[in-house]
Image (tube, rainbow, N blue to C red):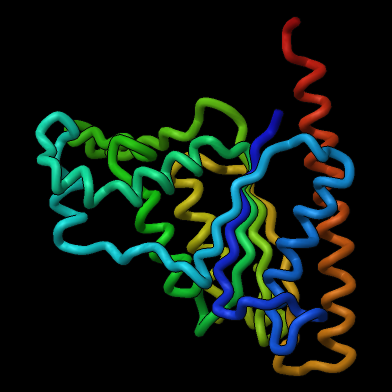
Length: 233
């Protein structure tokens, strides 16, 4: 039974279209999970709202603890890494990672960057071989197929890869790089654009993004069904 980790990173707590000044990225991520549950109500979910409850920033104590071997860590080091360990455990348990996030000033919100910093962990999600300068880092989340679904909302338009304003969008590229670094290489991205434009531009983008979410849900569920049928009895 697939397990889904759903993360929302918007500073806005509400849902666009329902709440005043609500979040469009939350609208998309909620649409994904609700559509998923329509066909697969028994799949399990973990939800984490880092937009309202941000992870801790990396500190001096965190660095000292994370780069001390597990058998040599003192009690305070284990306590320092407790939050990171929980976030890593949630990610490892997930078959599908769903991230709803806005584009803030060319890249991801600080809360989402803090989450990335907490889950990119030496010897937990990334193996480190200091003796091999050519392949120093090895992703550790390769034990099974995992998917990441990045659902974004941005004020500008034409900011997808290959489009005219793509050079101002570092959100999806940097997030994809971090996920691939730990071993999640099947990445799907859908965006709502035109929040600054509003009106018909935004309305059309919302409709298109929601349809794309529905298509992606169908595609992923079909892939899961095919994979389960191919597993040996």
